[in-house]
Length: 435
Image (cartoon, rainbow, N blue to C red):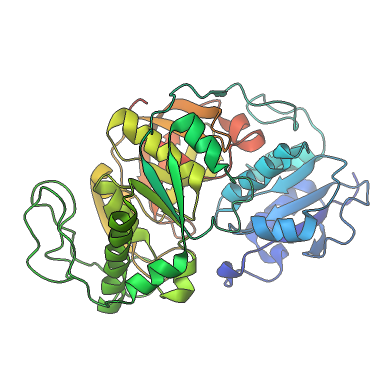
């Protein structure tokens, strides 16, 4: 076997990672399983595709899809693109978005994910269990089926606040197709309008939830309402990870909520998606708490400007009457899928606490615990003609330091091949019960 060549992609949001990937236990373990060291090229892709040796692109973190485009967006791929992923730092989710982009353009891609022995065997060309992908293949997974719910969102309006995040490279949508196939109207709203609205007040009076008693104060955790008669947000707690959440963080998070509610009223929105990472620099805060509350109020709200995820959640809500969880797939092991994100609708959790946003270590994020039981994994394709709709079971909650704050384990035997070879982008929707 020729010495494998290792290229890397790392987001600047993960500045604490080692500069040399060979210092990572994951890479050291893989080299041990291979019996040889990698020829590490870092992010210098100048010679990519010019060797007969196995070439791997190690997607070290989330947020790297746009970097992939900068490095290789005009490359004519002549062989299967091998994306190496770990089970941390949204590595797998970013790889899914890249594979989806490759497939849209007729290129072959495969995600190498799992144990060091499995990945080493794949690189050596060994025969592997059928539960693992054996190559790029052609066509969609049999789990992807035609969209059949019709114009279920007819008459509903959804705001796209800021453009989709730069890493959503396979998730562009045609607004006319959304109107024709789903009945949904999409409205672009500049992110600057939201930021200006937030800056109108640094300590807003939290609007009462429709149907609930009014709040008796301004912006404190003890008296802010959420959903359900008389429900309140829980008091602040010391976060497990990141720095302390102080009163300015809390008030800023509620100011984002109030500003989003103002845009909902101004544009008569039924839902929205937010280019939330821009708020890290503009406001030194996140939209995690705001989106958690909005979804609990019945206003469908998603992260990162992800329009397919937004409309997937809206379709699920229209069919079930329930909010759902937009999440990244982070790890696959023996038919168990670990999903994570830093916000979750408070109306679907059995308990929750506050933490900081994973990638930045700031703001107010949510660690929620969801009830175990039947769920549906759901995602609309960006053309709104196809969808994943897979019944599964939520079996556990976890809380590790290398992933977004709300973390759930979903049992879906046989789904590995879809996620590693033919995923519909990165974010997927976890719907409580059957859809």
